[in-house]
Image (cartoon, rainbow, N blue to C red; front, side, top):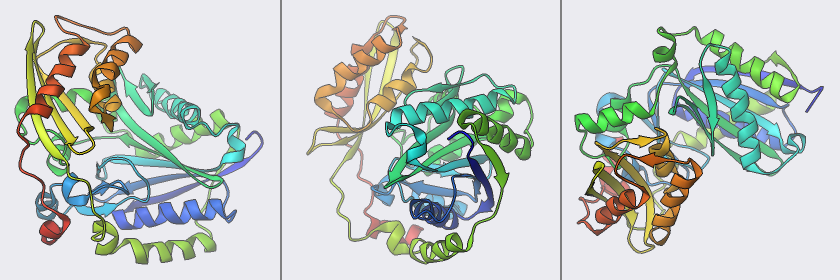
Length: 368
């Protein structure tokens, strides 16, 4: 993309519905050739977002969201549920795929994430890209990312933790950690880090945005210039908001989701006690999500997060091979434990009695 000029759009702090509508408007406009390549910065008023294909009541604690004034919204893209608040900075790229030199999403993710990591390095943070699509500091996640193609257009999104309340996230999301023990909360905190913790104080947002802008400009060989939404984007935004800011969009009442259960298992080995909380789809014998915690020691520290990511939407039959691959890829080791011990904890969870099912959308609709 050498010699090109990109636009930088800062849409500020907004409700979730407005941010989702802007996502759709900018992606559609880029696909239609109505807008240039764009870097967008965004922030959210407190919100819980589910992926396009997810069941709201299955993914979120709706009563807690209602009590805390946390908006519930559905993204236009897939992926998992996320909690957002003003202490996170979103960044997005809307690009023409022909200028990327490849259609391989793994290669694109590496290029974009390495650029974002370089921007954080300029702030004094030892950030690095962690495949498939995370940015980490010493094994702790500071930014999650993901992308999607729409025809000839790419939307690639990232979320940077400026300051972050892990316990609130755990209370919002119906992740496989239903019992918020001190150990579970501490374990979650060990896996993420934010700029405030790393730098000792809250960095000015303008400095963070400027560092990321310079890094993307250098990585793609382009000039960057601030701009506003054009008339076509504004028109598309208004139409998208009218559709997305509705209960029908958020709850998708006509959808039927396959049954799945949440289960917990444990395995005691020479290296300690491993707990596995598992979201399991019995009919398909599919592991939807796995979350490990316990009093074990493994190296590198990010191995646990890597295993959890690798097991998302994995057939139960592939469990042991997948975990063995994680250990092999990272030259990982544990004190008194190995990949088979984590697999046994998951198998024990699958064999356990399921926890009470989450309410259906209809049953929980009063809570939003």
